Image 1: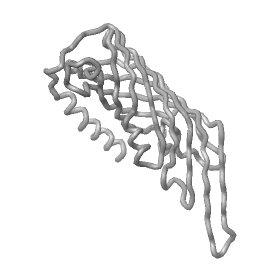
Image 2: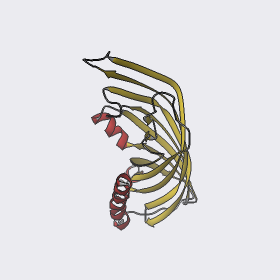
Image 3: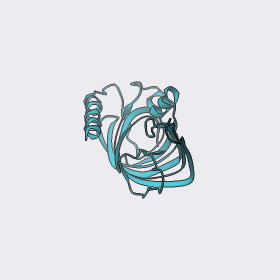
Length: 223
């Protein structure tokens, strides 16, 4: 509950200034079709400062300014800490998401959208457990599992606005935003020996319902 409460509070803190921010200096050119490509910059920062490697790219098509069809593809090498006492754990693999959003124009070039996505991950995981004792024999166990799969649904809320408040070509097409996800695991990932502790694209498996936040930068082309 604490994790979910913190997630909701952080979402409100980010949404409020975005929805209240004026964009009078930005000219709007309505279009019936727009194409976007984007990257998750938050995962890039995590890869630089942390022990984990993550990246995620995506593309979307906006139809009639309201309907957004999105595809996402990513990779993760996860090394969550403190999941195994006296050992280590690694999960590595690729994942994809596909879904649909309905977009609302809050102010000129400030958008709020909501929708749902289906996601699937193909990955492998491995771990090592070591227990040293002065009384009994030491325990040293390793495991490695290939060909793991998992799937889940996501309820998403997305915000985006111009990265630069300018009218110059190219620069005015850059947007930044925040995507809030509520991931609902639908696959049975139970294992006979060691549990799966992390899934690329989904995260830690401490619950079948997991919140997440992504920070991204988009480039938009209107037709």
